[in-house]
Image 1: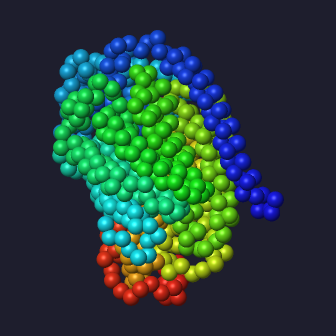
Image 2 (image 1 turned 45 degrees about the vertical axis):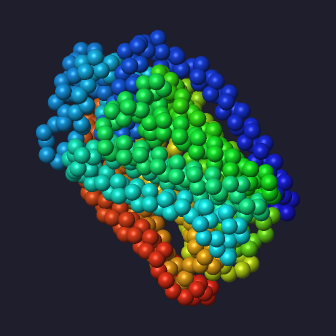
Image 3 (image 1 turned 180 degrees about the horizontal axis):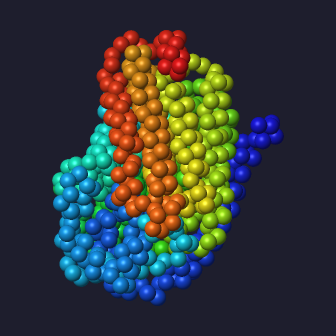
Length: 146
Length: 478
C-alpha cells in the first residue's frame, strides 16, 4: 500500500462507500417491495393462504424442508410440491392422505412426525403451498424434483 | 469475581462467565450436530423423541447464541481496555448474563420437551407470529428477551466508550454491536406475503453474517493482533477500515445473492452475482492483514496459541466464507446449487472459520489473563490447545469437503437432468450415504478436538516460555 493511502483515506472510503451502498440498497428495497404484489400474485393471497403460512410456521416445517430453496436440506423442496404432486387435479387429496399416514412405517427411512392437524389446517396448508407454487421464481427450481 | 494482577481493569473479568457459557453451548451444538448427521443416514435415529427439525433448531440456535455470548464476552473484555476506563456497570453485565443464560436454556428445553406447535401456542405466537422461520425459531417472548438483553448490554458498553477513549477498534466494535441489535428487529416483521417475509428475513440473517458481524470480527481481530504483535496501532486501524469498508461495500448489495429465486425482480441476479463475487475481498484482506501484522511483529508474545487462532480464523474465514461462498454465488451456478448440500458445506466452514474461530481467538487471548495465569497459559496447556485447534479445524475442512462432494453428486442426479429423468430428492439422498458417513466420522473427530481443547484449560505446568512455544508452533504447522 502506497504512503499516500492514509488511515484517513481508508476511513473516508469506509464511511462514504458504506453510505452509498446503504442508500442504493434502500432504493432497490423500495422497488422490490413495490413489485412484490405482482411477482407473488398477492391477489391470490387469501385468508386461507395466510392461515396456512401460520400452520407452516407453527409446526416448524422449515426445520426439515426447503421452501424456495431455503430451510433445512433433510426433506424435499416444497415450493413446487403442488406441481410435483398432481396440481389442481389431485394435489389436495394426495396431500391430505399423506399427512394422515405419517410417520411412514419404513424402518431406517427419514421420518416425518405426525402433526395431528385438523382438516381445516391441512386444507389451509395446501392452499399456502398452492399459492407458493405460483410465485414468479425466475423458473427455479430447474426441474419438477425441486 | 477474582481480579487478577495482570488484568488492566478488574471489570474486564466479567467476560469470563460469558466465555465459559459460550463454550458449554458450543459443546451442545456439536452433540446435536452429530445427532443430525446420524439422522441423515439412519432416518429413524432417536425418532420420535428428537425429530430432525428439533435437533436442527437446537444445533443452529445454540450456534447463534454461543456466538452472541462470545461477542458479548469479547466486548466486555476489550471495550474497557480500549476505552481505558472500567466497565460502566459490572453488576448489570452479571445480571444480563443470568437473564440471557436462563432464557436461552429455557428456550432450548422448550424445543426439546414439547412439540413446537405447543410451544408456539403457550408462548402466544398467534398474537405476534414470528416463529417457525429458519434460525428465528425462538418464541416471540424469547426474542423480546434478546432485545432487552441487547439494549442493556449496549447501554453498558456504550457508556463505557463514552466515558473513555474512542479508539477506532471501539467505534467499529460498537457499530457492529448496534448493527447486530438493529438488524435483529426485523425478526419481528413477518408479513403474510412469503416473498416479503423472505426478503426481510435476510435483513437479519445476511446483514448479520455478511455485514455487521464482520465489523465485530474485524474489531476483535484487530484488538488481538495489536496485543500479540505490538504492531503500530495506526497501521492496524488503517487495515481495519479497509476490511470493513470492503465488507460493507460488497456485502450490502451482495445480499442480492439471496434474492435470485424467491419471487424478487430479475435484476437481483446480475447485482447479487457481481457484488457477492467481490465478497471474498474483505476476507482476503483479512488474511493479508493477519499475516502481515504477525510477520512485522515487534515482540514475541508468550501466548502463541492465540496467535495461531488469529491466523487460523483469517485463513478459514477466507476459505469458508470467501472461496466456498464464491463457488455457488453466481446466479447461473446457484440456479443448480441453491438449497443443496453445497449450501450446507459453505455454511459449516464459513461459520466455523469466521465466527466460531474469532470467538475462540479472543477466548484464547483473554482467558489466561482473566484467570491470573499471566500473559498466557502454561506451555503444556498451549500445546494441548493447539492440538484442539488442529483437530477441529482439519476435521471441519473434511466436513466441508464431504458435504461439497455430496452436493456435487446431488446436483448431478437431482438438478441437472430434465423433469422425468431427474432422480427424486429422497432417492438422491440414498446415493449420498457414503459422503454422509464420512462427514459423521469427521464430526466425531471434531468432537474429540473440542474435548482436547476443553482439556487444555485444565492442563497445569510451568509458565509460558516464548522460545519453546515458537518451536511447538513450528512443529504443529508442519
